[in-house]
Image (cartoon, rainbow, N blue to C red; front, side, top):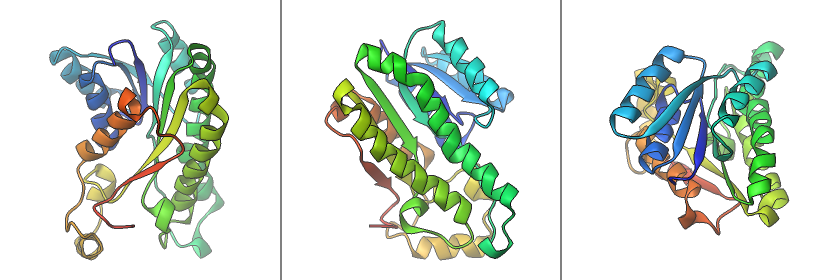
Length: 243
């Protein structure tokens, strides 16, 4: 990937951070984007210490101005060939009590933000007739989950967006795929109560949570030339939790 520029959202921690490391180790020039600049700085230092190329970009995917500024910065380096839409949040609660604000915040971040980032890279990808778009969805976007109507809807929406864009962009040699992680050891799952964690493990045939690096390997595969005939697909990396 030495000639490729990769843009990773939500890169400050967890899955996004692992994806940035994986793509940099594959030779891509990575632009790591997130709100938490202090965490991005340590990621940039780690990648550069390994001899890779990485720059930090401030990004709030719910802000059009922030998105415009981020991609304007990247434009100075060249065309984004690989986009990893990973930024995501949760605001859990039963539907009967879920506020419209908590519904909208999750949809704005997880789905609309991803769509706007895709729009920012399409012209460049179409002109060069090569591109990889990878949306980080979730196992619950396939299976559903009580208490997460907003999060499930956003991730199911990402899967639908993936399929629609795969049909639109295939003729331009741009592949669009999704990775659907199961329960992964990230700050998002660290807050789970112990009893919920134990119950979750009983639903996973491999009897463990996944690691961010295992998701990053799937993303790295879909971003490379070995996946050139794969598009419109959802690659589940969930330890067998949903089949």
